[in-house]
Image 1 (cartoon, protein in one colour):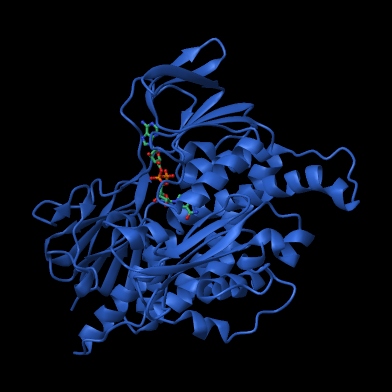
Image 2 (tube, rainbow, N blue to C red):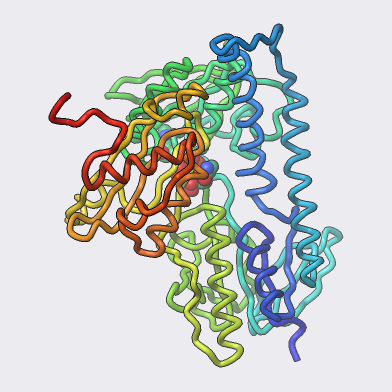
Length: 477
Ligand code: NAD
């Protein structure tokens, strides 16, 4: 008799969601965590970042936009310490919620660092160094990722921070150089530029948000520049030095050595899987580079039967909602197998939205037009410029758009890209469509309320198969 049906190592959005789901499916479940439940997402990632983005956005809106609509707030100011406190309170409240959910669903919490041993035993070392071994039918590894740094001189200087370090700052920085114009880089640039810091982004690739639709990258670059953010692309960081004015980042751009100086440097150059100390002696889990190799068709089982891995430690998309979806998929299959079934979980892991919380927000799912071209798929593309959307006009949104990519012969929706207010909420309409293989016409059956940003979706869909209503016909322009 084993101690548990399932032991999950790591209580981030992958692990804790899987543990709750497993318990709901009748499995005797334990979860091992050595910091706080909620993982990176709740404690050092999505939630604290979005709290800071909310605070900074509110400050910018009150200070810059009130006057345009006749709302005057004198002496608008912020207290950085209080913003940090609000960010922390938000995370803490969500952490408490997850703790209550684990307890309420009967999941056993084991505090300490987990290590997998042969025969699906798990050794947990607590804060005092005491070790206890638990046995399980199944083990799920969900230990997530940690920020990666770049191998350049000066990367260890005090004041060179990863995203974890940024959340620990208690005073507002005056100036920052951000290495990396990926998601973390542009989100921090938004926060600190909105609060009035001088921000420089140094990105090695030809454009910021290289994995997103090209038009989105170009628009965001313009918007950030308007907010006084200096952006250098095709710029490879070579070293960092302490200078009289702060920390100077030296980079190579078009064969020239250039530099940017800031009070702090943020290294936002990606994240790497966290598997340190996870494997005990005699455990031979197959790896795929730094990631754990799994078989998606076998619900993320590793080469060791009964040992699974999900989230940032496996190859593929590193996003909280992806980890949670993989967790649910994995335990649904696991529970079915225990009953002798081979169920096909309902969740569709192919339609995974990506969201960036800049101003305006950015969201995309499925294929871009460029992806389709690369794969030789014939597509139609529809687009609606949001400056013609009533709600966007009311709320004084930045210029933005909604784009739809559909299969040329069947009108099946293959992708959508959005850059506008509430894009991160609205993208779900396209996720539903893609996950269920819906066509443009099927989405157009729905009447969207007025006045909303969602009306822009109707218009972009109409443009995909003809012409949107709120545009002047092309032939008459
Ligand atoms: P990223 O991979 O998105 O971007 C890192 C960038 O750093 C890349 O564009 C890369 O070219 C650049 N870079 C690397 N080395 C460099 C060098 N020497 N000089 C200049 N530039 C260099 O990684 P990230 O932004 O750190 O984010 C990490 C992970 O966290 C990603 O998987 C991301 O999707 C996830 N995340 C998601 C959200 C969200 O969903 N809103 C928010 C934050 C992070």
